[in-house]
Each structure stands twice: as structure tokens, then as C-alpha cells.
Length: 84
Image 1 (cartoon, rainbow, N blue to C red):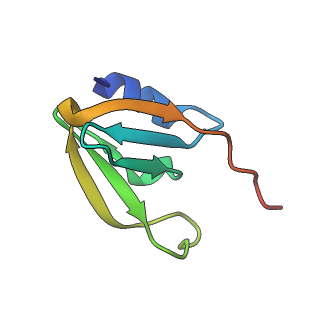
Image 2: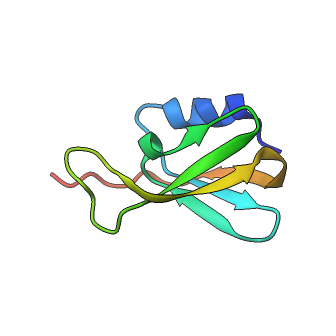
């Protein structure tokens, strides 16, 4: 089980590396924008980004609310190449 403090540290890492949250029912959620997620003591709100990125910052179209007890593990994914 992932703890809130661990998730908070992963979301604050710079440069940020995308994450995949694995849930005990077999689903997974990718986190590519750390800014649209919320860590609370009893839940984790995963922001599902808009299909088109809103400038100058990303926005969530909705949130998936998960209790910490259903999160099996968090996988750090390869960094997304920046477009310049």
C-alpha cells in the first residue's frame, strides 16, 4: 500500500517523471501532470487531464477519487520528451 507521504514526494520530484498508479481491481491510471492531483490523508484524487492541454497550465476534466487502501503500487514511467 502506498502512503500519502510517498505519493506527495513522487509528485514533487523535479524534474517530474510520469507515474502509473495500479489499483487492486486491475485498473491503472497514468499521471503526467502532477499539478492536477490532490493528496489527502485518507484519499488520493487523480486528475484526468483535458484532451487538449489548456495553456498556460494543465487542467483536469474530472477526478478519480481513490482510498489509499485500494492502491497496490505506483510505477515510475520513463520521462516524457519535451517538445521544443
